[in-house]
Image 1 (tube, rainbow, N blue to C red):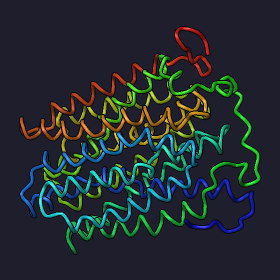
Image 2 (cartoon, helix red, strand yellow):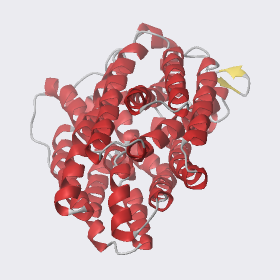
Image 3 (spheres, one colour):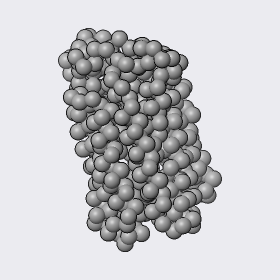
Image 4 (cartoon, rainbow, N blue to C red):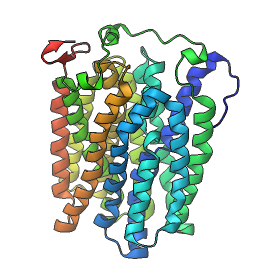
Length: 416
C-alpha cells in the first residue's frame, strides 16, 4: 500500500476533494461506459460485430459491478474508502490491458465481466461516501465539485481515445487508458485520501440548518427499505440513469447515422461530457440552497423535452444541442443520488444503502443501452427507443415530486 506523507491537517479537506475529482475523471463510467460508442465502428471493422453485439458488453460489465455492490458497500463501511479504492484502481487499470487478449466476441465479454468485478470499488459509491462523511453544510457543493471530474474526464478522454484508435488501434487505446488510470488514480487515493476528518485532526463540518432533522436520522438498510422514500429514490434513478446513459452510449453512432464524421462524433461526446460537468457543478450548488428533489425534478423535466426533440428527428446541429441538454441532466443525476441518501437515511449505514440502490441503478444502466441497440437493429431507427427514454424521465420526475421533506423519512407508516 501507498504510505501517506505528513501533510498539514488544514489541507486534508482539499486533498480529499481533489482525489475525488481525479477519481471521477478516470472512473469506469468515464473510461468504459461513455466512450464505448467510439469503439463500435472499429470493432465492427475488426471483427464484424454489430451494434447490439458490442453494446451487450455494457450489461455484462454493469451487471458485474451491480452484483458486487453489496460486498463493496459492506467493505467501505468496515474498512474505509481508501483501502477499497487502492485495490479497485489496481485491478481496474491493470485489467484494461486485457484488450490484447481479445480475439473473439466471448473474450471481449469476459474482459468486461472481469473489469466490472475488479473496478466495483472505484465507482461513485466510494467517493460520495467519503465526501458525505467530510461535509454537511457544503455537502452538495463538495459532491458537485468532485463529481464534475467525470465531465472533465469526458472532455479529455474521447479525443485521446479517438486519436489512439486511429494511430494504434482499439487495443492500444484501452491499454493507454489503463496506464492513465494507474498513474493518476493510485497516487490520488494513496496520498490524498483520509477516511474521516477525525483521522486528519479535524472536526466534522457543522450541519446546515435545513439539514438539522436529517442529522437525527440513522436508519439501517433494513429500516430504510421499509420507507417510501427508499423506493421512490430507487425507482427515480432506475428511470433517469437508464435513459440518459442509453443516449450517452449511442450518441456517437446516432450522430454518425446523421452524417457526422468520427471526429465530430467524438467532439459531441466531449460536449456531452462538458454538459455533465456543468450539470454536476450547478446541481451541487442548487441542492445546498433549495429542496433537492424539486430542483432535480426541474432539470429532469427539461431533459425530457430534449429527448422528445431528439425523438422527433432534429437535424444534426440541433440534435447535438439536445444531446448536450441530456448531458446536463446526466451530470445532475450523479450528484443527487448520494445527497438524497445522506439526507433521508443518515450516514451511519450510507454505503450499504447506497449499494442496494446503486445495484438497481446499474442494472438499468446495463439494460437500457442494449435495449436501445436492439430496437435500432430491429426497426432501423433510434426513434422508438428515444420515446421510451422520455417516458422513463417523466417517471423519475413524478417520483421526485412525491419525496416529502428531509427528516420525514417514514418507517411502516410512522415518522422516523
